[in-house]
Length: 301
Figure 1 (cartoon, one colour):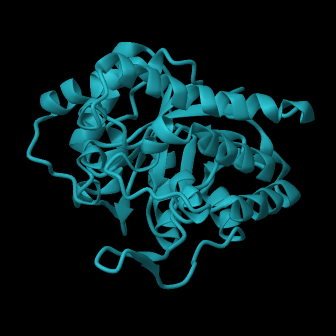
Figure 2 (cartoon, one colour):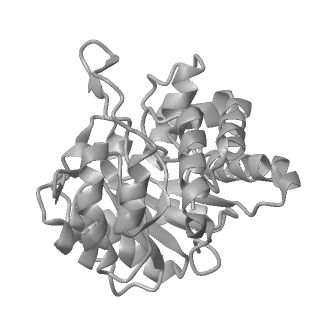
């Protein structure tokens, strides 16, 4: 299966200012049609899964913009509805597609880059209590599954897995990594083991990492017995002081053959991976590995 690419960076490439602390979730308020257009672009490029623009959304973040709790809930629901509308608009080709409701880590809502460090100084119980309200909203919003993504350490993963187990909804869990460890420095085998016994976690893997780090992460993820999902960044670096991307693109669709060969079954991209990359990725995988086009046990959820 093919997942989509980076929605926020594609929105930026189309001229939208995402410097707000809500990041792409700001457009749920101001320009929802732009979000739907990006989802549709990824579906037309060959993606089977759209991930909603709710990654950085939080009750606190919406409240800072003067929104009530009821209004915030409606925005999360809108995020799912936009992805579903894009899916429905592409339904004439007969392909089945899915919508994954994005649940970013606690650090994403802080908008200070701490999702790339983890270790927030919060207990598992505190993280569980913080994540639960928005996860409850998105679990009921009509998505096919939840995307627990860019998770930097296993404590937060434990909290997220506890909540989805309680809710009884399907989800994938993907870590952001640096080399063979989580961003917080834990071995990947330990990180993936957190979800190994959860029936609610239907896929596990990595995202928002360098493409070069993906291959070595696939095999320990596959040892959980769950389908493996991988969607790295382009490989470019973000210059926070200069507010610009630096370096060269290292994401090459042909790399997906190695990831697939090692056991990855859902493959896509994250930051700076756009519809053109996903189109080439889809051609690479579907052209030479017919089984890569199969769904995971009938659906991702």
